[in-house]
Image (tube, rainbow, N blue to C red):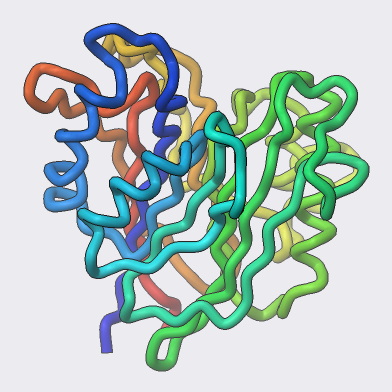
Length: 259
């Protein structure tokens, strides 16, 4: 029985953006390299247009996925979870980070209709919950988004380990991070329902705007809780064929199941 578990998270960068030499048509050839070098059980992708998801589906032949809205406008951006076919998705849900989560919508202060995808997965003797999301920019909306995710999570089996990935557009000093990790004054940080970060201080930069600058903000996170242990993690700084995969660096982490 395999006692290890691995994940990748990456903001793909909006595929219709006018990025010149960094546009999707140039970048997409780099992804087979990423997935070959960093094989993962789960891949959490944010800001994914349907044509990007379709391209990745064709190269990730050993994976299934959830999180695609169908039908959707051409410009629509999803939070996709690819998972190895050795796993079975027994429950999935998709909702909006807004006052009306089940209706395509956004909060009044949000620039975009932000979303969250959740799946419960089983493989052999193991089960876990994987969550993939993308927060907006306003700190108060970020907190409400985090609260909504925790509320939805409270309806799922509390004994299952949880991995939460995404582009949170917030640093570890922001209120939404402190809420998710139990660091605010109203929280008990020893509560098993709060999350830990796979990375530790000084937190590495994850957003670089295609510059390769490693000193940007740590706004992409891999958080976890429950009966899994973080073994190692890294920011993938690789430049492939002279180009970066995205304006964010991918994050890669390995876990092991508690004995």
